[in-house]
Length: 221
Image (cartoon, rainbow, N blue to C red; front, top):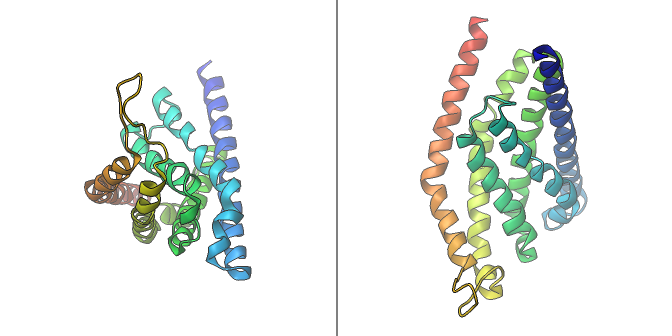
């Protein structure tokens, strides 16, 4: 029974990783094609559908951690995926005015390259039981550049969206109402910006630790 479960687990995770890899590959391909042919102003419209699908599929990674399919701790997975989903749905999808900003380009390309490497790495590991040493190095080294570019793009886009959030009052709940509750999406966005201040350095140090352990382990083997 245990061996059958292991086979099914690896089969499922392999299929999951390769499907999401294809989604992110499509995002990167469309992004680069649009940049060449039309400019960064049209990039979001070109990648919107595969971006929404590929990024939303990451929700399953939280479930994978919760039920023990993978060893990744939910405490590190949740904030990373949560911030990505917030940018994808709560900023880019919700406020079309920000979609032509140049930071959308750096955000999408940083995310896409990172995820193409990550999902193909784990796809190889689950399908074949190993990944080439160069693939492991890419998995645990490209974040040194792509994490800062991605995070700075996320922070910048939230900041530049604040005036649109304020003007539209989208997702706001005003008093009085039957629930006796109020919510201001502008303050929520400002709070999100505040969380990036301690959160980003913490995650960067966490990934540096991961890199050190992974590369040291590969040298020993």
